[in-house]
Length: 196
Image 1: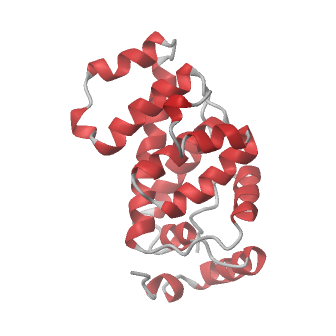
Image 2: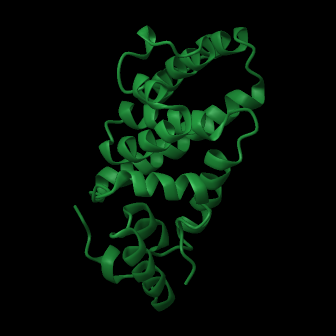
């Protein structure tokens, strides 16, 4: 359900910023509308986590992080997020790697360390209650550090939240996915929640 309040419920400064974004991009991305509405309640707190998880990882590249986000979005059946983040992963890593997470990644040429992460992310996304110590062992065997695994978990958390918001609020699909992908690849997510 696309709530009218997400079009009309922002403060004056936010409305001006949203108008500028809409003019520049051709539409207002759903995440910006949601994370800016009643910002002190949610967006102000979620946005730093978003930027940290997706752009400040120490172990994983931006492309790999976006690859993981695409995969989690696919598990959660969120077409909006899968489309945009797949486009970013494709720009960063190439079509073959990006497409692998939307198809049968087990039969792909992805590195084993990526495959073990994807197996873990699938379970963490769909059966978080069933995660146990044994689920971490394949990643440890591949040489992934505790920090690298924590970064993966943060990506999963970020996308499990935004995937549900995207579907609950019926985010409008990006009319120009590549334009959005180029913008996010260059600028990151720090300004996703607008002050106002």
